[in-house]
Length: 396
Length: 194
Image (cartoon, chains in turn green, orange):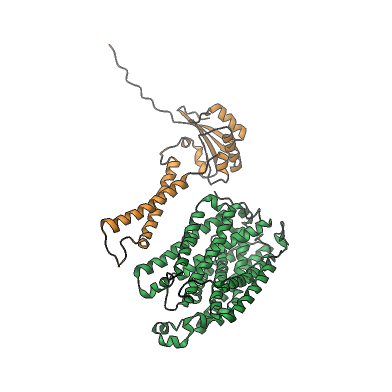
């Protein structure tokens, strides 16, 4: 069944099958993963954390993109605003999907073992921060902040659909300004807590920025794919034009470079200083077949997208853009896999079937949440004062 | 028409709004005019197409300069650190790529930006001290609310009379001839002959 929409009200009249498919895939994926839990619970937890972090970074990217749009008073991205807002609004609900991580903390995080911490001077001195109750409080706080920000921004945006007023526009800007600061802090500490503390002896202050750069790439790729999915069904095909794809392509290119810049900054300082407690991180990821994964990231996450997306023609070619969006999402997953898995498989990369089922499970639920909300409201901010200008936007 | 009597260097027409100017530019393009340019207070979408301009080659200049900068930077560091004056620095090899990347990156950016700025100058024929359009008093409106197009005398089809008629038929609100100020001609001293 095709998705259909009303060209005058910008409302979806028939939501199509995507939501149903996503929900079935989500439940199926999670059920299979649960079966995997009983055969290899450690593998399950690590695969699940990878999948969770992948989809959470897309949600965070949606929050970032929405607030950036308001703060810069952008015109071109008005037609994409409802998409990013819906991704953002799905983010806080992920707290339910965080439960397996809480249950698996003992398997995932070395620092939760009290007896180990007692014997370890470094972990002992970090115990004031890295302890189970504080970890849970912090995670709760991140989700609370994301909930409040997205509720305010999304709610105001829906109110604008009833009737535009300068107050509503200003309100979204006023929320976004402190919201951006809170976003930076919560994303940084969430990445420290959920991912960096997998190796509690190691630390890198740029780690949060690294995860952030990946999350922006992920949301941009996600936007390209959703917009193209709509376009295929002749929805918004004359609203989201090649000019908007061109801009998404420019941002994809820019953040490919930004990601590489951050990744290299992290690597070079550690490599140059050559201090054992810091180099250990890269030592693990240069060991055995992990070296291959590292090279795949270097070329797949930077060199290939850099060369492909360099020209104007490529950014305006929807097929190339689609392939690059799929590719970059895959690379984002490899990147998070590369951050998480060496803690479990020290001797070399092992891809488990649980990596697939957890991705499908969490992803299915996320897409279902996203799609259900998306089809229930006008799919563009119809009363945004800059909406018409956004549709007519042209790159000079 | 102006009442100056210096050399004629072009003809300038003012239009009411961007749409009229675009129409005029397309007409000039279709009539095969080469040396004409439009002057507006802000960028007008679709003007490049209306004037029949091709995509700028500046991108290639920037790309090539960037590649030169990057490879030059790498070559320079290799020659300095591994050939001419090898020094062991914190136990790293003489040629150690990670340490060279920042300089390679910076030189890529530097030469690419030089390519962008000076390439832009070249394609815009800058710097130049004067341009025929500045003979017009009215032309200062181009930075405020005036939409101008000027055909320069170097155009093979330049003909003050015919061009004026063309501009009139396109709906120009003001047309003026661009003329150099009258030169003071110094009388040569006549040799007295006996």
